[in-house]
Length: 290
Image 1 (cartoon, rainbow, N blue to C red):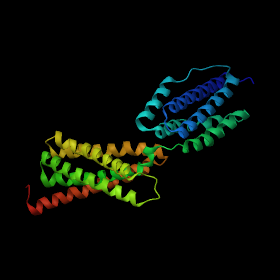
Image 2: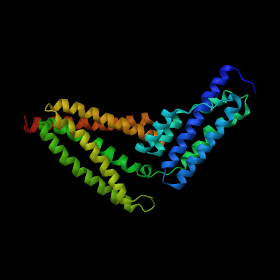
Image 3: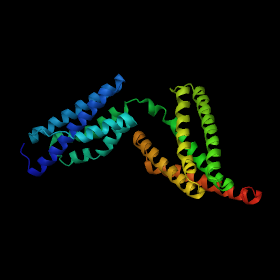
Image 4: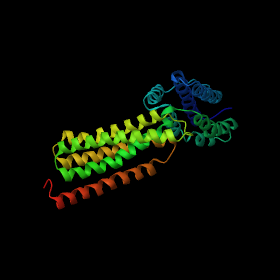
């Protein structure tokens, strides 16, 4: 079928995207150890190749793939996990089915639109990744550390008024809390026999998430002597951690970033404000550190 030049350029762009994604899925399959996940990835890659062939009938071209995109999602999968990389890629192409549906006069493109919207999402949901199975444990460690520890450091800031002492007290408190949270997660996971999680792994994920957060939040008090400057930087780091984690979580779990980010930020900063005021009140009424 003859097509005009504008449509032809659009079809070449669609074709290049399908070829690129097929290579992304193929490369991810080559590094995936789980055989069922590998089969899913290869099935999606085959579908993308078939889609590219449909466009080739109209374009009679062989556009080169986007090598940058292939490398980008390969390393994202290596660093942040298979599910995150794939869902981020799919979200970036979320309007593919809308684009295809604009060419309803081409019956084959209408079929491709339906497959882009439904079939691949169902296949992606079949992917089973360990780090997502333990996401609840990571959420527990991060959320508790952010809410509890921002509050503790804010309270220590006025109660102690010495950055090194705040860092020391905060570190001891944070490590003890991390061990406590890890132990609680171990016992909780062990008691819930229906959950397919290993208690020790769940405890490790929770403890590591807590400790990383503690280290990040205590660091400003180690580096700076001005406690209020350290407090401000600490709160900024807390907000940054909330943003980064919730972006990862929202993509990997296909949930609302704005809702989760707002909830966690309000909880963390609300507790920090209350703790800061409590620290101030204790300093005034006890006269300690005045």
